[in-house]
Length: 420
Ligand code: UTP
Image (cartoon, rainbow, N blue to C red; front, top):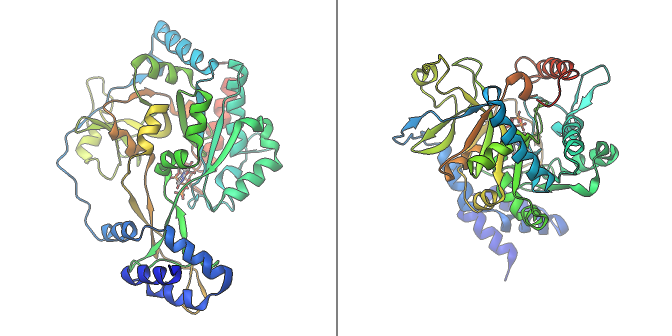
């Protein structure tokens, strides 16, 4: 079978003639690598995803309702003690693992290198985002007398740098035997005419396919099988960039166990009705995070009898799953969203073009789109000042400056108040 001819036939079928031209110019290893890459790409899927960018988003007739939650600060002492005991027992029994999603590009922050290697200017000396996560995990390990297995998801783009950074820093004292680094799946980038972009390495340019790729990547990397072998029953998945993230919250875990749910999540209350965050709701009887762009203003402003926002629970990427839930989701196909982004590429003359305006589409699935595969979710409302200080933007809201302030405020308070 002529692999090169097969590749050319596919490229012709999907109107990617510019890649045929490139293929003709290359020889040796580079040519073989490109042919191999072409064989791995699902051209039909990419064409569909590109075509979808041209369509108006249709909203199906949906019934939206508020979702119930428990407020951690309002639990009775008895209730909290019960949850904490259940959660603690599961962690001590070695049934708990943690996943950190670190495969994002961090484009808004603009830091050179993986986001986890960003140093936040706290307490004079500063701390790396990965270091802050390790400190949080180590504290839990000390408290529960166990080492929690930690899985870190990277992208093909940032994997080598992430591994080198953690090695260089000796995993900030985390026992390396308990750390597994895996790489997430990718999808090709296309330009505004649906043509695949070519990168500097003369390959088709691909990028991580969103944090919703976590589930299938856990499976394809063998991490899910590894977790099962270790007897893990609960998996926490969190982001790399929230410096107040609690990776082993026994109250959240105990609540999930007690309510016998497959998925649970910690929320914080929306700052104001117009804050640009996704909020939890029930849509057509299934849990869902609805983006601020999709929530009608009238609904966003609605308040309940106590004066609280009816749709006020923000999703903060602090999610918990049974191992069976991860297994189930990892076999499902999540919907892809397209993001119009700036991406450099090589043109037909071999020159690198660095665009100043968005020129291409990146396809991403979102972690929360999996919630609707379930009938129920348990939500624990945390507190913004204790649980949520993301580093997203270079300046302004959710920036290193705001994260530093929240982090230091929290830790100044913590010196005389344990176990929040
Ligand atoms: P964001 O969606 O905020 O993206 O990721 P980002 O990459 O950090 O930043 P921008 O949008 O490019 O500025 C939330 C979490 O999901 C992870 C990120 O690393 C972060 O922990 N993520 C995102 C992935 O692991 N993979 C992805 O493909 C996208």
